[in-house]
Image 1 (tube, one colour):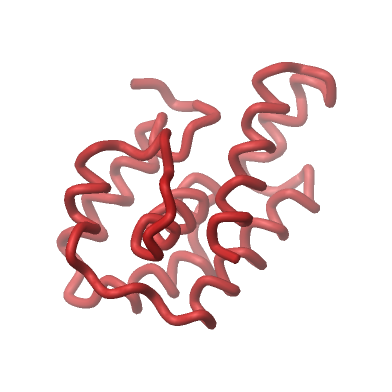
Image 2: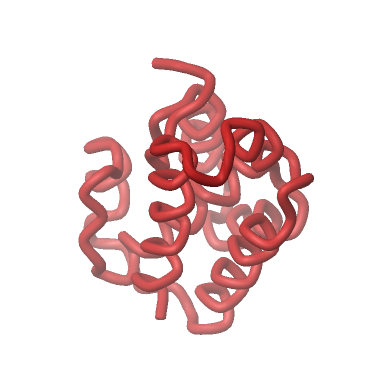
Length: 127
């Protein structure tokens, strides 16, 4: 496991966030708080969790996340829209925490493009 990955749960911070989600007294309030004040990695992870909760296939999602989401209710549309907006804010701001590291690779870098593609894919699955 590395510090950075283009996948939603391909880094330590995202998996740490998922561990905190599992221990949170309320999953949806925890996700909502993450979307407003979380790190880039946790916002991406939260968006991926919401997509799985919405019944959307997320091929790069860690199997433990899929198992945790199984049988849980779909999130409200307002929370999904908040995730779409939070991810868009990351895409739009190359100086954002985390995005700045990817942006240093250059706009034509394969890893950077894969990371952006993953963000857009999460947004599409939340619509």
